[in-house]
Length: 358
Length: 144
Image (tube, each protein chain N blue to C red):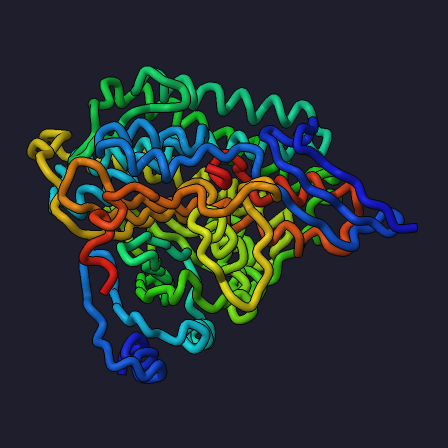
């Protein structure tokens, strides 16, 4: 017998409003439709009615988890249009904050995955880790979520206590290497719930333009930090973890390995960061023109198009978040899956509904 | 021959690429977008997104942003009578992107259905359309 199950828009397995309608034959999924309209705020429209500095505050609110990447990408676009150079020290600060944000995002995701699997102690372990990372971001910026670190031409503040950050990063790396990776990769329940589940082939990932850890877990080695380095990424040594099985397990492994790489990058950034100013010359005017900029957010590539007519208000701001390109493939991944696996498969791409329906 | 040049030759556009600090740009108002999408798909390019930009004559500048081996290729064309052929059957990644642009600007992507992505089914598309007098001023110089 065929029946349709609505999941959402408000559901215990969803942290944001989103609706997935799953058509099932018995316990197995025949088709699925997605509806993402519940969080629409018209950010692009608003951005074309605010000046460049006001827009930094606005775009930071596209997403509560990768807020820094949005301000970083927007500021880079304006800097490119205005021909502004960013001091080297500020470029390293940008990397440190971006990688701390990646760590908090991946820790959040690992916790959510553990929760969906039903592994409560692992959920608490991941969230305890995330708490300490958010604490350190609060010590640096004064905020746990919206750090307001980026400004046009640099960053707004110094990292006052590098040793406190390095201590947390060292502890995080130990937690990931000694606790999270062993549990996630060897626990029988996790392996049973993740291996061979929600497979996305490399071909499908390429056809659908999938980005970030979801693409890398399907054997597509795309990473903007490597292909088009920005900030100080070209000065740092790091690996881009790639797995080929394309299942939920591969997405787990890629994200956990990325956490180790983020720790390595932060440690290197503190060692290599030169003394000097953290802001460039005062930002005066953006000449007419247009530009595109991409950054690697925790969920994948963030894209901004910004056009200027020479005034202090952009004529067009286009934002493409990674979840917008990753979410359509959930439909492909759940086809033929057991209904009980649908929440985990959906969560495995780390969807952000706030980003998607910005 | 460079892959970008190969693609230009295939498209028979006669327009040279302009290399800028943010990637390669190609302005081709009369571009055959389906042919372009075929060429890019065959070249294993990834569709990053598409940008719609309202210009003065009621038309839209549509920019196809592609990633080809890490390089950003931006192909600019224009709508005709507010519409442009859909490339969703050639490149499925354009599905939500075209629906988003339809929601925002009511651009018609011909050859496909456009169920709303962000709007309620009873809402009219085109919520980002600028109906003010200065709409034409803003787009000046970009209509080509």
